[in-house]
Image (cartoon, rainbow, N blue to C red; front, side, top):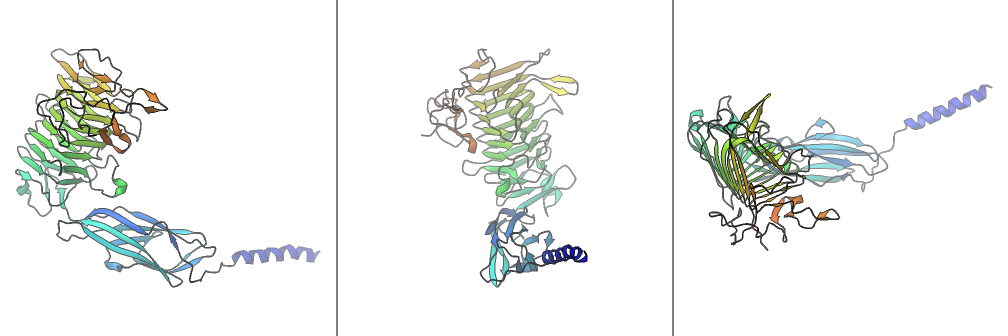
Length: 492
């Protein structure tokens, strides 16, 4: 009886001891680690600003554990790069045992030191792994760029680092020899002018933007070959097409305040913000914010591309595309003219509740509607997107207020009644004929890659009549005597 009792106990003890036995390390000199990548690349990193964090995995593909004798940054403490090894920040670690078929994470960041150069610089280093006398490495590469830095001082305007405050409170030309990185709202003070020359690049931090105060002016002077860029300060490819990265969701990215005058924007690319341009006359509705925008692109906004309250805006040869709410919203009166503009909204991040173009003569202020007259004209334009209805016309009759809108020689995706006199030679829903879910007559070349050149059989080709002064398209291509609708003339 005692023998039978001891046998199970002895067997259990043997099993427990066997389970406690440590697996033998693999020491074969041919045994190596595997990695999820062989190179970590950071796109342009501005000096003094840390990069995003990138991560890669180190694998032990073997059936036995392996000892990483050494894991270190080749540049040591002086490296621009920083690493974090499974939660431990250090430029070097030794004797890391990696279990069979297991992995660990390496996190990498970089900060670039200024070099007082306008040209980009390349920063390199590597992470060296030594296992069983094998040396393996992961290359680290970062493109660095010196920049002008603008930041808030808690007042109403901003200025570059090391520049006296009163030096900026005058007419000013923004430098274009290297990028401008902006924290907060870069503000053009009252009665002054900010000129942004061709080739300038403005990179805004989260919730940052450009504001133009009362009686101040903004002049953006881009060219076909050297547009002015407005975008975020995150330049890595992971952030290349992420909307909502800059600009306040209420005030907008470029905020033209009440009575800002003679604002001109030519050949600008405004992308990846909350609201691209907000022309705001709500503080003093008896006056207008004035803007002329030409040959420009506003794209990939989480909210609205162009939002205007009781303003005066003329837009020629512009593409406004892919916005979470509207490409153009004119919700409270004003005087607007759009010529040869392409409004294309194929937003895919979430469903849009309303059409991309909104024209209205009232503004909701709590339970009260405030009204103002509106006069809107669209000539030779395209309004198209992935919603069934892309046009919203909202009129509330009010004594003394006029509501005037007109579409001439346009292509508009709408189910509204276009037999009214407000529509002259307007083609609606041209892409409704579908075969196997594919339109027989797409308007654009490829909306999936934001290519708004016209498809070779697009109905927009030769659809319009010439508008004096707009004999060339957004890219400087000559229009013929029967120009195409939209901002871009078709090139075979």
